[in-house]
Length: 372
Image (cartoon, rainbow, N blue to C red; front, side, top):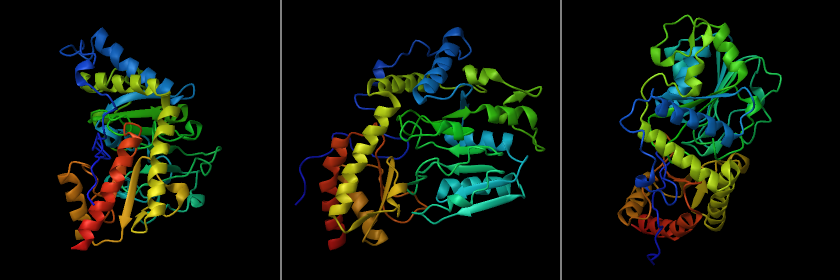
């Protein structure tokens, strides 16, 4: 039987992600529009975004937050181009974005002393084999595989190299052991449902020390330059961006941070996301035709939740089209490089009630797609 109740918000995309509940673009603070981002007003808004991010994440003293161009990708590239090459590198890859960092390190930067630790979709590499005398590059949560590292216990406290962590679908949704992370990147368009194009770069004092003591041998694009005269450009981490940001996007991000405070901060967002994941865990336990792509429950993502099904690739496509046509789930197809399946975003901007309303439709679409 075709269900009757539809999700109030059918946006389950894993990026750009759903806007926060109750979002109203007309309520944004727009007095900065048409003003220079270098005006006192513009700089104040940008600095506020950096300061509030640090406060809501509970960053340790000495950690810096900067707004950079190019979304999360730009932030990761800035870190790799600016800091890698002094030591050997261990780079972890278990899905498409981690594999992209492998390509950049080995084929673009052409670094030689590189160990690539890989795993198939659904699995993690052997974390115990990571050598922390080297720099380590990894994603915290594999957005396209739904597989996250279970915690930070595997990261050495006495590490000699830097840990460079792509955490775009984890920050504000998962517990992060900040003292073990030297570079963390994310983008507004993931967990908080902000607008795209801007990245956030978090640096530990150890990362700053690397920037001030090491100069890479390759030409450095202007957009990646974080030092001048051997010293960190501190202004980048006070809202003085390298290039012109969208102040509309900044206003949108500040709105998202205000909403985050209203639900209990990062802790509240994590709890909200985990509660929605539990709904999906119960659904999978009750239905043998659908499985999580993540094979170890301890590594199951609570944001980008990825599934495989007892269905052919064409049947999966039919199922996705049916859900889209009925207006109950948009943009839930698996990432193009991942195994055929579906992906449901469960970050805090998605309401648990909407996921609950979606589940009968998943069963209906699967039954209809596989009956043909």
